[in-house]
Image 1 (cartoon, helix red, strand yellow):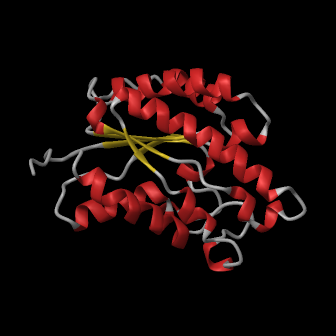
Image 2 (cartoon, rainbow, N blue to C red; image 1 turned 90 degrees about the horizontal axis):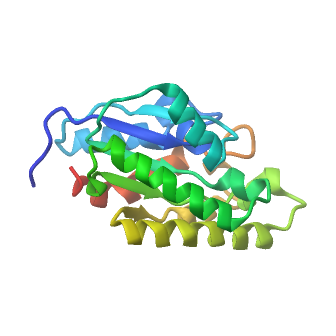
Length: 203
């Protein structure tokens, strides 16, 4: 394995990437960088462009406003839950997600093999979703994720499916953040561990 020395990392996303209601050290992307270093890879903690509540279009606008012109050794993208939550169409998501993939590839120096996408978790298993139709939420999340996976396949980009892991948080308070909506560092650790073997191959 040829490792990029002093690799840098950009994480793009929403509340799950910024780690709403958890410490910075518990963010899944920060934990992943730590696991990569533990395995002997020289990589920085991620630069992050992410905010709670962002949809694909809001992430796109924020990236433009950031003025970030850097090139990264590794770029991750996790976006879609707020499109689903707001009842936005899958057609709009496909178009905007595809644009974000292209943006991620540009950040990676036009190298699709340095980009990976993490699937949207299922917030329907959280206490916040009590009283809502969790089956419908799961079906809609799966539909958005299917689009993301299809677009990744077309673009030759790694897709990491953490959605089944997120569903193990049902009835396990230790995997839920204090706000009862987002996930805990313990759950995020599992995402990082899931991504690790395949992400290592990108560097």
